[in-house]
Image 1 (cartoon, rainbow, N blue to C red):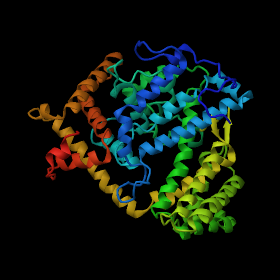
Image 2: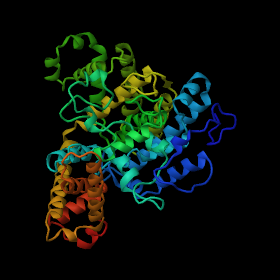
Image 3: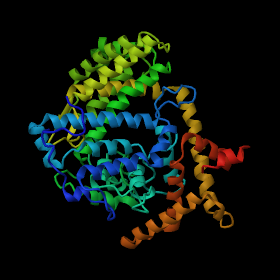
Image 4: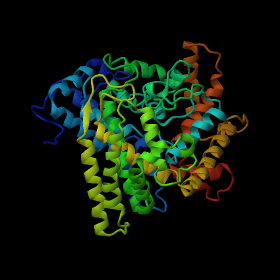
Length: 516
């Protein structure tokens, strides 16, 4: 397959996006041509300081103590971008009915896909997913922000409000196509804060079931919801709760990179142990009928018994995703992971040598190529799926790979202890900066970037209140959201340094404080 950005004669290569998809938030003189417009977007994202900071933000395992081979948010984003571009180009080359369907839905430009993949993690705060969960809880419970914090919503906010460029004081002035392509969960949290939403298996992926909380995953805060609605309106053939085609390509690429490349890290770091993982998978395969006969209460009380955690994972998968979940396919996927991960990779501990690196490369090559080649196009997807998705067998592969990730890494007590400490760091930052802004005698001495953010965010809440009066305290809300925006923009190291400074325990004033 030719791998150039310009593929003469490729099916659909002459199909141009509509003017609505090319539209920016403010008028701007740009080079002629669709390709040029999208490349400007890609360059603005990659030149953004929010993109650069991802090199110092945790993916899953902190780089400190694990070596430079461990992924951070930037290296993860670059690999998602590579996978996403490959999928987009392969779809274009595939042609036929699949490309006709894609064209009818709004198209799939490979540069838009790369821009979305590059941007998809911009909103992640310090300390990886732990930071996201901690900031959400702090924003809601300590600061009274009903829509809390969510990494995808923060990404959209960075692209459309917080970051800036020469053409716009607010946001990067991106095309509608790129703004739409980052909307993995195209709704606001409050859109799902109701009693009639329906059971979990009939809700879009990421919504969750807590009606009081609203959606667990969402792509816009209340402040930015109107822009989300406007951007989505440019794609009239895309369902209300569906991603654009370009977004679904990015989402699939994210799943592929997350499920494969992070396992590389865990193997290199010595976190994945052959014996425990082999026991879990082999016991489930060998004792399937007896495990299936266990009631849920018994299963939940014995998850440390080999095979039991995987059985629970299968039951949850079948319950949530009955549209695609199949016991036979799940069993086959467990066997593939047992052979491809456990027996082929983990059976020999990583020692840093050439042979070990070749084993990692072979593992990554096999799984990435397998998953990239297993792409399906769906004109009428299930509410929990997308227009571009993994085939049934590959979908089950990712479920099992993610199970290994969760059960044998994220659930480890040593990682949990570390994360609890990180959560305390974030709590001290939220409380410290919020109290500072509330101090009329000392608030003018707060960091300039924070004060500018407070002013802009209060203005945004005032505009929202004027358009839809709710009796909101715009000053309180503006300060609270600005604090969350500010802390979310830190790297891991900046968060640690700022916590030491604001807690009065740092003796490195100039070193620790210069970048805040």
